[in-house]
Length: 121
Image 1: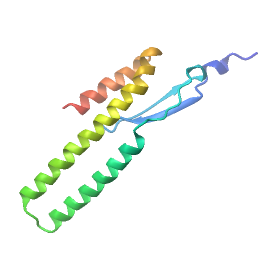
Image 2 (image 1 turned 120 degrees about the horizontal axis):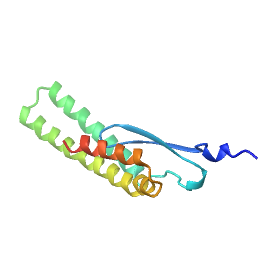
Image 3 (image 1 turned 135 degrees about the vertical axis):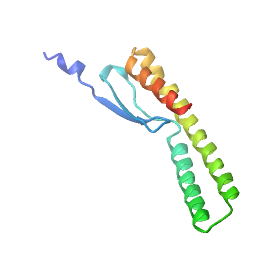
Image 4 (image 1 turned 120 degrees about the vertical axis):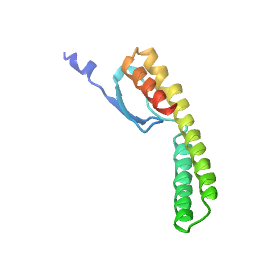
């Protein structure tokens, strides 16, 4: 009988935190934790729109558009980025942090603290 398999991490997953930090952690067999974020599709859709918006602002700059117009558009992108970050952060708290607290995963909690510090600057 081999008991070392119990300690083997069978399920590993990665998140990108609000500040762009990539966090990967594992859950062993007993956790029953599949990592399906409820909001992934919404986040990706928002990011696609953001990328499109930034591209159009870049074109505005290339076309020599009025600086104040460019700044207004950049401000809109900034608040949209904050919106996406909030969704990711809330999602992370609902899923991963609940598990981290349950499993007393100090590392995951420390990483969340770092991400929050980066996010709220």
